[in-house]
Length: 184
Image (tube, rainbow, N blue to C red; front, top):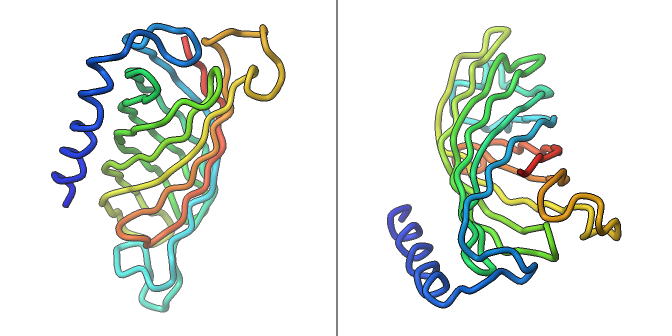
């Protein structure tokens, strides 16, 4: 299933790349857009979680997170394809989290995008919870200054706000996050 999804994404991107001249916001349709970000969130594992992050008495792991990430986007006309690595320091039942995801997005306005992502994630438990690793999936949105009426402050580079929601191992958790993303 995952190979079929990746093949479909690649098939959609190739025709767009062949005809791309420039993106809707006037930037080159080809290029590399590196970025990094910092943010926070909360990771809450379900009580029905069958993984290592549930105690025998039914209590599931949860905790606040401070996260940092870095990645690179590759614009392909109105699409954005990218890869990202992340690390998060957890509080309460989660000690550390880290992982890597790939994403595909659709440009929204001058500096924003809607995206879906998937990848692999490691969670180091604390307070009696064991470590676990599995797939992570999610979706989100990024908005920049021009998208919220503050045009001319940073142009296409600069700071953007990201709101995202992820889930671990077939909907075994919910992980909402908010972050500031610095594009250059």
